[in-house]
Structure formats: C-alpha cells, structure tokens
Amino acid sequence: MAGRSVHTVLFDADGLLQHPAAGWAERLSGFDDGDPEGFLVALWEAERPALEGRETLRDSVTRLLASRGLDEGRADEVCALWDNIEVDQEAWQLVRDVADAGVACHLATNQQSYRRDLMIDLGYGDLVEHAFYSCDLGHAKPDPEYFRAILARLDAGPDGVVFVDDRVDNVEAARSVGLDAHVHDPSTGAEGLRGVLRAAGVPGA
Image (cartoon, rainbow, N blue to C red):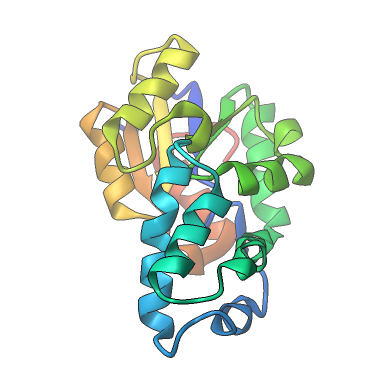
C-alpha cells in the first residue's frame, strides 16, 4: 500500500505529537488508594464514556472516586492530571513539512472535552486542517466507527489515506476500514515518525 499516492495523513496525538510532561506519575500517586496500578487502570476505564462524548471527564472521575471510597471533592484535582502535555516541536515541524508538500494533515485522537480544550489552546487548530477528537465524533478508537466517521467528515474513501498511531489495536481498527495504517514507537521520537511516514510513501517526510 506504500506505493499508493498519499493525499491525506491522520496523526494520533499522544505518543507522536505530544508526550506526558515530567512528574505526571508523582502527581497521580497522590490520588490512589494504596493500589496505584489498579487505580490507573480504573481511571482509563472510567474515562471511556468521556472519550466518546457521553459525559464530562469530571463526571467520569467523580464516579470512579466514589466507587473506590475516595474523596469525590478531589475530582477537579484528578482531572487536572490531563494537563500534562508536552508538545514535541520536532514532530510538529514534520507535520508542517508534510503539509507543505501538499498533503492534507489531520489530527485523529481519543480525547475527552477537558483535554480537547487544552489541546486547542496549544495551537493544534493551526497545525492541522481538521482535528478529529473522539468526544466530538461520538466514537473512540479502537472502534472502527471512529475512522468511518472521519472519512464521512472528509467525504473521502480510504484510498490514499495514511494513519499513524502508537497503539496496535488502533492501527488494526484503521486497517479494518481500509486505511493504510502504521504503528509508531514513541521511543524513536520525531525521526522514527519520519521513517514511518517515508515507508508509507508520504511526501515531505
């Protein structure tokens, strides 16, 4: 599929264009109930309705705290953990390079509205043509409907569309609807992402 003419790239955000800021784990440890690993797993599970736009992150977190016998009054503090965003400037420049080569670049990311608003303030609206946040689409990766919703918004088929994500399950879901999808290893940074795009035949990479 790499030989196909690429006209569009869908970029995941976390692990590609942004990363957790230093100290996130230490901040999280202040909210667990003696089971930090279990609390983190439960936190990701509780976030799912918010990722799909069915409720706010605060509602999700409040319900989780109540279920674990923790102080519901700290919900806003827990929500603030999602502000731990450190933009990868080299990866952002790569997106600009691809866009300058005439390829449509879009964001395709799972986010609840709390973090979506933070990312808007970071300037993603200026970086990409369209930012497809799961909370706005009503579907979240790895649901194939997430990708179908994006293609519908773009009024396009899957041919010539490349998707890059750091999660295998998301990539497999994208492939199931016909996208040329690739896994990126976050440890390889922007240069690794450039290599993934080049292998996919993306101009400007």
